[in-house]
Length: 379
Image 1 (cartoon, rainbow, N blue to C red):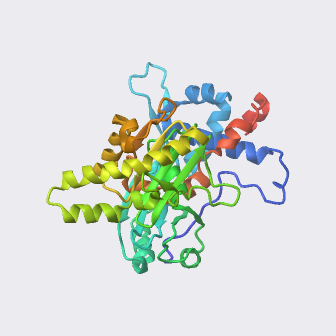
Image 2 (cartoon, rainbow, N blue to C red):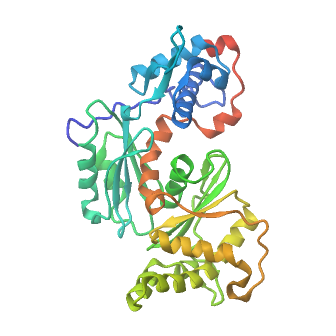
């Protein structure tokens, strides 16, 4: 790493691990949590006044002022006079996304991608489909493009079965930056929850169709679920469709490419592929819906948008006609294509440091009791 790319990241209020071993919430935890909540509110709702924040958090305005002062000091929040204000000036506060950046790397051999995002998850620069051996160099190149005053939060890595480089190599190269890693299906779900189609607080499933297989990411209560041993989501081996072939074969992007190459009409080739693919995907959707009952299923990955739309349309238009099999659909959740490129795998990787260092833990949103007015004001 060059001397100009340096991580100054700490949590908004980090408490020594030796003090945090117990389940209690101390003064530092409260201050950190409240600061994260303020940032999240500004990220989601845009400009808010002290009174707005006070009402939403249940804190006094002096407490809000202290939180905003700390965030402004880090360059994460800015302010302006509210447009159309009366003779009494009203100040509103906004998140300042350019105050922090994070780098995301998708390590897949056939779709290695690097992306640099700001604190709001907006893309500053990216390099798609780079050779695996050039991914680290691409990441360094993107970090050099960050705004001069921006803090580098860290590096996120999306892991897949066909990783082109090792996560150990990434950690060694980008030290002393914090490097966080997760499965590509989980990073896709993270991106869907924060900036995509997923439910920010509820439950949804993100199905990721890649050239190395089909995987699913489950988000419950705003948090990704990986299973007891971290291997949840490997649905590509499911036997599906009339031919009982693996789901990964039925939805294979390579099979679609071959169909398009063999036929003269691209739309007709996609439509024919979609009918067969829907026969396989329907089995997976029914299985997921019957067990998890998510509020939404988002589908994305390395397939063209038109192909995903065609598969979704086949399932939604005539689900009982696929393969001639009757299917109960009244309890099936809505399906939609991911609005994010390649289901946001690299974007989700870049969001890992942002979630870790800036945004609130969804568990705390549910578990932290309301603070007494005096204690909250001090926090």
